[in-house]
Length: 417
Ligand SMILES: Cc1ncc(COP(=O)(O)O)c(C=O)c1O
Image (cartoon, rainbow, N blue to C red; front, side):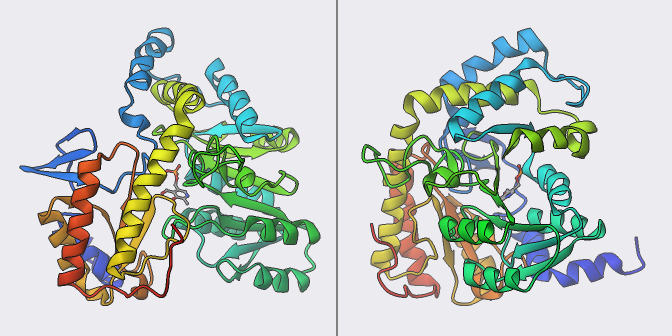
């Protein structure tokens, strides 16, 4: 390993490599958890880096449901899905299709695997229109499609007009648009109605990864308890869209705290994927405990999901209001529980991370090259399981960070609470 490639690789992402080596907020070993508090060595910190938005990972009813499934099914089915699937998959897919209001769904272990498998199939050697800021896992699926003969063209982030400009000049037989739903850094959703209109007008498939939105945002209604909407049935329903020309991808590994993911698509496409998507044919399945927590999660979502989401909205709102009062910029204009705080100077990231750690706050550090230098900062994720006291403490520490470090100033009344 000494021909220099390791050093060259680490040099290319030196900011991140330095953090990984020395900052306590990266690559940590978590020794213990208690609610949303985590212990690293002898320090207890409030965890604001979890994507378990609904707190289902700690929910007693969900935890209690698991042993019964293990007794009936053992720990792991082991068959690839083409060989055979426990009936639990059928139950999940049918409940999921009902929740999303789509024709059909297919469950596979992770979104990463879905992108690698499904994007090349849908691209079909034609043109992929890729959102310039799409998640890395979408990029990887597009790279694989390119190796299979597809052409990749990139359009500007959140810009349906730029997408339309590219589509107008494209004459390939098949067109696929790939983008995120709720963005994993800004917490904002794209204007799905505008993108869906463009997709339909140019006979393209709009492929949307709503890893973060699923479970949180959902259909709008006069009776909704908060602006996330009802039922957590994802971005398509949130924008009142049909599934015409839309393939929705989502996962259970965030809001539902489980290891499984899905494609919402017409039954015909599902049939194709069953023989063409490698993870259906060759990969091991999700463990039984994960299938069990998805099913128990559906039950809880039906019973209390909307109340939990209203509580999450309120908690997030407190954090956003605090930043607003401190005059600190965050790209979040939606109220979604992802709140990124960019620094004025990207070089401060190590010191800011250490300061937050020392003050007992655990967040995600967004370092270069994970994000552009102008967006280097820290990302706070709020979950329903964070207590009021943990959030009070976070609000105090945010004030201290603002006094000690240069953060980017708010651009104007950014968040309409
Ligand atoms: C937008 C987005 N897509 C995909 C993934 C990966 O999901 P999975 O763990 O199911 O592969 C993530 C995880 O952070 C994500 O944020």
